Length: 48
Image (cartoon, rainbow, N blue to C red; front, side, top):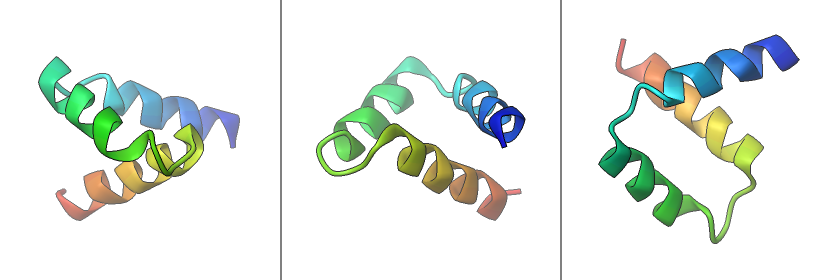
């Protein structure tokens, strides 16, 4: 499980800084980092 989460973090780092900041601003008020990473992974899967 920990390895999978690290893979998501590595994918997330590919985002531009502006996209990352936008993502953080939208989610940090109501989601934990784990939930945000899980939702991001779903977003990535949907765009492949």
